[in-house]
Amino acid sequence: MGIIKNMNKTKKKLILFDIDGTLITAGGAGTRSLNLAFHALFNIEDAFNGITMAGKTDIQIIKEGLGTHGFSMDGNVKKMTEIYLHFLQNEINNPMKKIKPGIKEALDLLRTMEMPIGLLTGNLEGGARIKLDPFRLNEYFIDGAFGSDHEDRDELLPIAIEKFSRKGFSFIPKECIVVGDTPRDVRCAKVHGARCIAVATGPYSKEDLLTTEADIVLDSLIETEKVVNLLGKL
Image 1 (cartoon, rainbow, N blue to C red):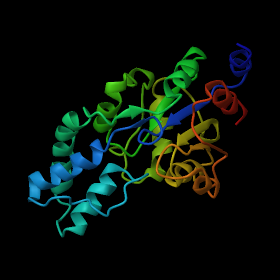
Image 2: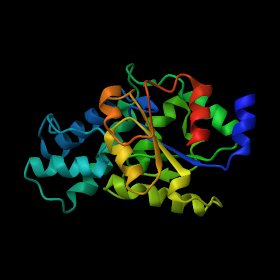
Image 3: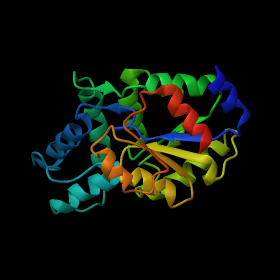
Image 4: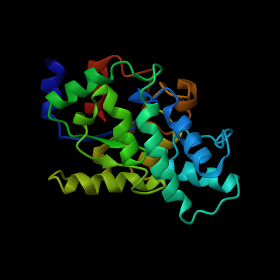
């Protein structure tokens, strides 16, 4: 209880979590759904093969796929997002999906301390909620910034702050902490002067993340009380 008491004495911070690689592993559901959507629209299989996705927004990825295969953006981005979400509803129900170690415990502890927590993710908002639903994680996140709010991840932090302000929370960027697993997560925090905890639970190693501007780099969030204590020191 000592950590909780100490944290309650500190000014509240807005903690914003990435999803894929940080909170959960979707078991490839996102990539499969994008490929299925592209095939449904254009009869091209494995359209996103070779396109890197880590840390990018869904809209950015979809536009890259369309551009790679010579299709225009007009109307096709909207069609792709709609069909993608349709397939994702089914593809998320796969045996490879899993929650990352320590996540539920960390979220429970933050909620006990009444720390506001949200999402900062490249996922479309609908896709984010679909991915979190099997793990019953949606209830922890009252709002956030999503790839459907802006295709440039670096623009998402101010959007999250604005959304939380409408719910009665007042934060400036330096009072926000982004938790993510890619260099893009780090950058989207640092361009606004926010703090960042990088976790090596996604496609990047701890050594890779140590080369970024992350304030703290961890192997995982499994040591819950240590992690929460670190949040209070940032």
